[in-house]
Structures are given as structure tokens and as C-alpha cells.
Length: 506
Length: 31
Image 1 (tube, each protein chain N blue to C red):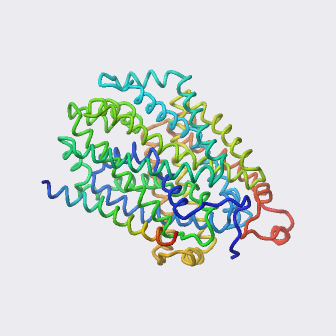
Image 2: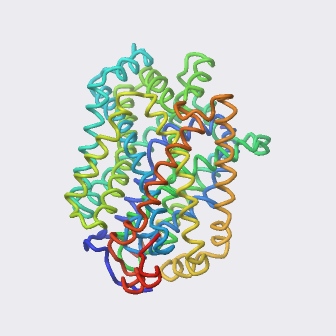
Image 3: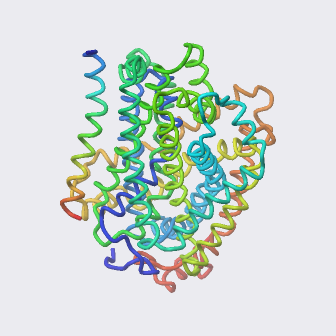
């Protein structure tokens, strides 16, 4: 394998700390703050933490290493990386992965806008002790100028960072954002844990309810949380790795991402659950908060809880600042994914960044205006991330899992053992189980209507939207394989052409 | 002091923090 070739634009991270910070800030997103606490509380606290640790080892760490390897060695975004690792007939797989993450980018910028709005409201003193969380949320989401306006603000912020490039934009901004986020999370966790009555919440979170480990659903929830939260299978680390310096340590850097992500999730769970148990006026309030879903818990119940907390004027803005930073730093990674893939198609960075910004603005607008549309997109493309993870594992299996492991170990301080190859081999099985479970849930929750593509959470809507994207990327495979830039692993055009019988790709 | 809670907090938070600290020392050693 050739070495020493930098990505076609010549950009790269200035230091190892820069790429690690960027990767951690990519993984730590809203899922750590609004999903981990809720799911951990629902599934037996410490028992869930135990299952999450297993899922990190089996799913997150191996996949993150696969992604890092593919980006760093191919020096190309998702489409080019899949082409060079699997062959010219598989550029569609990278395009599918990119489409999934870009579809998520569309509504994720809307969510980032919500976080920015609530931060602004907290700073402006709008989330005071008399706040009616439900009424405030409904008034906000019923105001299209506000939801679309803050969506646009998030798009402008992310575009500006990506426009300025890897060192001038991403590196500078993400290091500061991550440092600020970690400080705020630790401060809030200590504040929450020292509230009178917080011990009940901490016990709920950390002391294992062992019999729950026998419940298959706990394991499914743990693997799902890890798949969605650590960024494994999103293709984002693959893109950040494109700009890695030569001989970057793949094994250690990827492991930092997964471990830091879970640790931040646990700290966020301390904040939410300790506060909930210490401040909630009644046990019914606690129960309703935990059953209210990500959005309800964060934007309705937590708002009311923080408003009644000692030091609320400082704690509420800090909480929503942390949420906004976590969301924005993940959104920036999604913008970079789109930008890098477009750069591989020959666009200059500035043109690529603006194109992605305009695309995000358009893709997110329906989600900004209709919550049901956002819910549908979250369902369709959230589950698709599992398929992206499967495709990543498939790429490495086709490339040769032992060959990939040797390639990782060649530049890694920590040497990866055979366990890694076994885990990569297990990923298709984990995908089948997780995907089957989610589809089973969708069928049983919508009896008689599960096939309907117009239902928000149906199997039908997934089938139609996935098939649409699949048909487009599969149909365009030859075009994608030929037009994408060549990297250090790419076959010379003449050889590629003769292998295809002179017909190019599929 | 809730000894049981302290044990499990140390195991989860301390465990993850220790692994992260170990990995970060590797990152800092070879910047």
C-alpha cells in the first residue's frame, strides 16, 4: 500500500490532539445528553452500563477503527474510500452511507437550532421559575419563523467553520468547543450530584439491577445507543481520518472516541437523573419525564426542573450551552462529510462548503416546519445508520479482515489482537438482530398499518425511502466510481478499465 | 456514605476515566 500521499487538497490536522479532539466532539452529541440518561434510567442503571461496555467493544471500537483505516489509507471521503477498499463496483455503498448521514444532517441542524434557541432564551431569562415547559415548547415549535430562523443560524455556523478548512476552521473551533463542553458537563455533574436528595438518582443510575441483564431488550437498547451515539457507522470518522497525518495511530485514537463518548453520556446521565430525583415535585413527575422521549425530557421537563434549582440563572444557560455545543460540533462533522465528498468530485472547498450549506438549509426546512416530518426522518435514517455500519464491516471483510488488522497495527501504538477480527465478523450478525428487532417493534406498534409509507414510524416508510436512495446510488455507481478523485490506493485508470472489460463500473 | 453507590460509581466513572486517561497518555506521548 502506498504511503505518504496527503489528501488531494493537501489539508491535514495540525496535530494528533487536533484529530482526537475533533473526533470526540463529533461523537459527543445530543444523544449523549438527551438519550443516554433516559435509556439508562429505563434499563436498570448499572446493568445498562455493563451492556453498553460490551456493545462498545463489539460494535463501536471495531467500526471506528474500520472507518479510521478506510479514510486514512484511501485519503478519500466515503464514496472514494468504499471504491478503493471494495472495488469499483461498490462506490454506491459509500454514497449510501454519505446520503444517510446527509439526510440526518438536514434535521440535525433543526435540532441544533432548538438548542441554540433554548440557550438564548435561558440567557435572556425567559426560562424562569414560573415557566410552563409544555406551553413554552408548543409556542416555540408553532412559530415557523423561529424554528426556521434558528435552523438557518445553525447552518450558517456550521458552513462558516467548514468553509474555513481543516486547520483554519474545524481544528480551531472544535478544540475550543470540546474543552468548553467537557468543563460545563463536569461542573453541572458535580452540581447535580451534590443536590440534597441526588443520591436516589445516582443509585438509580449506577447500582445495577442485575436481573435486567437477562432481558434481551436491555441488550438491544444498549447496542442501539452505542451505534447511534459513538458515531460508529456514520462515516464521519472516516472523513476526519482523510486529513490525518501520515502514520496516525488508528487503534488508540479510535478507542478514545468510544470511551470518551460513553463517559460523557454517564456524566450527562448524572446531571439529568440526580437533578430529576432531587428537584422533581412528585414521583409521577419523574415517571412522566422519563417516559416523555428525548425532546420532551430535555425541552419540557428539564427546563422546568432547572428553573426550580438553586443557581438556576447560571445552571440553565450552561445546560443548554452544553447541549448546543454538543449538537453543533456533531453537525460540523456532518457538513465536513458532505464537503469532503464534493471536494473528491473536483469542487474547491469553498464551493463545496457552500453547496452543502444550501443543501442542509433545503433538506432541513420541512423538519423545521413540521415536527412529524422530523420524527419520520429521524426514524428512517436513524435505523439506516445500522446499515451504514454493516456496509463498513462488509468493506473490511471484502478487503480482508486480517489484512486490515495488520494495516491498523502497522501504525498503531496499541496492537489490536484477533478479537478485533472476530468482532468485525460479528457485526453483520449484530445488524440482523438489531434491525430485525426494530422492524418487529414497528410492525407490532402499527398493526395493519406497518406497511404504509405515509405512517411516520412504519416499516413501509423505511422501505420506500431506503429503496429510493439505494436505486439512485446503485444506478449512479459507474459515474461515481469514475468521477471521484484518485487516492494512494486507487487503481490506475487503465487497469481499472481493463478489469471492468472496458465498461467502467457497474 | 452509601458504600454500595460509591463502589458502582467508582467502577463505572472511575473505570471509564482510567481507560480514557491511559489512552490519552498514549496520545500525548506521541503527538
